[in-house]
Amino acid sequence: MKRILIIDDAHPVMLEKFKAVGFEVVYNEDMTREEICAVLPKFHAIVIRSKIIADKNFIDSGTQLQCIGRVGAGMETVDVEYAESIGVRCINSPEGNKDAVGEHAVGMLLSLACNLNKADREVRSSTWDREGNRGFEIMGKTIGIIGYGNMGKALAQKLAGFGVEVIAYDKYKKDFSDEFVTECSLHDLQKQADVISFHVPQTAETIGMCNADFINACAKPFVLINTARGKVVDTEALVSGLKSQAVRAAALDVLEYESFDFQDFLTDNMPTAFEYLRTAPNVLFTPHVAGWTVESKTKLSSFLADKMIAYLQAYTKR
Image (cartoon, rainbow, N blue to C red; front, side, top):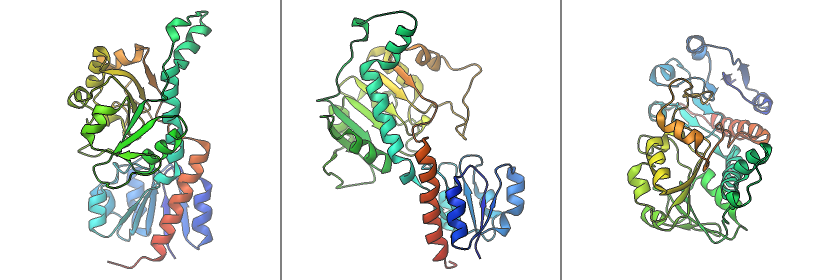
């Protein structure tokens, strides 16, 4: 019998699926890292989210560990390279919130284009400024997507029908052009895009990917959308881009200053760059909720459970 330890928030559908195939499940969200490491040798798999960092020492404490599952897309809190090198499979579930992220990115873009949030605040304070809230249409614009995985593809699909041209760059994928998107180089994306949306994981090479050099290489003032990870965008470079009007507007669901578990961000002595963003009328924030819908909570756990069950049932010791 496989034994599964769930130490972070998961939908009940996950427990139901594990139990339906005869797995024994322990679900405890209140365990400390030390408590988890103490009991981990008794389990064949663990389900995490963002509460702990699964580094080498943590992974080594699971002497029977066969699989690490993360409820979500990003795997930056797991030492995937080490885990897989010793035969521990790392599994995530980006299929579960791809539609939520795609819809959220479209919503943020439309809000900026139509000045929805700004106009709403003004009307609530008895300001009726029609000319000051004249927006722009996205029809006829070129939308550039960086990273064409589950999230990037979902955004491209959601944009169908808006009358936009969608282009995408992905360093690790080729020949993915389809009815929703045209594959291009990063250079061509920077030359053509009116809107640039990031959908890359946080890795050593993507931290600070949107920096001063990236912004300066773009031929047009562009709208930046980041629903990926906060550290992908260099905040100071973004502020400089907004001030110079190289960046037309920015929609940020994630921030460089978030805690590793995404539950909070710096509140004391915030950097000057953030203070500028906080008061900029052409900047829109949400608190890392692009993939955070009622439906995605179910789907993230459901997809992950299915993939973990398939792997564990077929598992053979390496």
